Length: 122
Image (cartoon, rainbow, N blue to C red):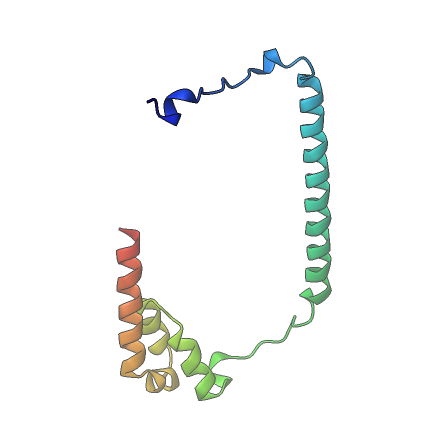
């Protein structure tokens, strides 16, 4: 008794040259048209994004707040997001106010995140 596997024949993949209706020029034209349509949509989206960026570009021009003028809680949150111990060190020693805001938790978090990034790279 033969198994069903031996009875099945594998169909030969037809080559493009065997297909009478295959037209390379038509395929290239379709590909080119799709590419043109895609690039047009992409460029329109980029232009729209640039218009929105230009609309709000001058909203905060000339509006600067010194870091030390921010509330202590805001500064603490900003410093907690620093993941480089050297950045935290440099910022902390730029003023007495910033030095007083640094907590041991910030230093530990910064060191841990810095070590994790090093392990991810290598």
